[in-house]
Amino acid sequence: MTAPTADVIDLLAGIEPGSRLDGIRAQRPAARENAQKSWLALFEPEIPGTVTALERRAVAAFVAALHREPAPAGFYADALAGQDGSAAIAAAIAAEAERGAATGPYGQYPAGPLSVEDVAGPVHRVADDSRRVLGPRLAAALEHTHLLVFRPRDASTAALQALLDAGWSTTDIVTLSQLVAFLSFQIRVVAGLRALAAA
Image (cartoon, rainbow, N blue to C red; front, side, top):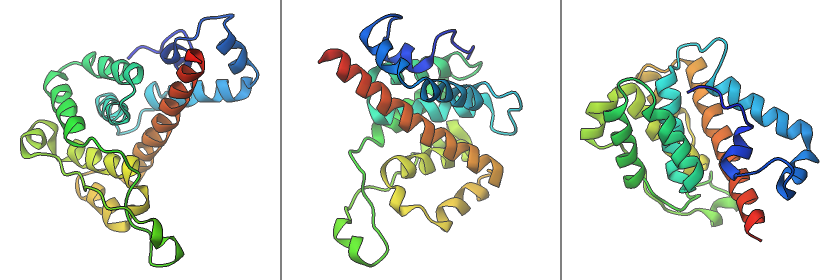
């Protein structure tokens, strides 16, 4: 993925220079700049480490598809499709996003006052045919990503161990968590800006 010349949130929200929404975003220049810097650090890092570009884009496509926001979903699906040898992986990601569709958030809090807010929901497991395409490392990443998107209250040592067992280092896990958190933020901002534009 080549870094877009425009601010990615502006691009996804369809914000034109000089528009009302451009003016709204201009009121928070540091927030705008830092969001773009975060995107670049996650998707065009100077030192990429051991989380590959393909893995980053596969996770992004999955997160965006789970959020069901058309502009981000299309953007990140296209970014994944632009990776060499990604056709089968892109198809598996799309299939898993469809299988993993949910509303959330759900999960269980530790026993106590918040237990009244416990909500039952599915635990996503990557299908065997998708797992054969994705491999154990990326399959584990999708399962953990689904947990972070829909069941963050169920995060646990066991969930992290599943990633370690699949070949994710502790540094990789931090990168994965940052990707999911940033994308969830970005997609919600885009949805809000599009809602403002339609108002």
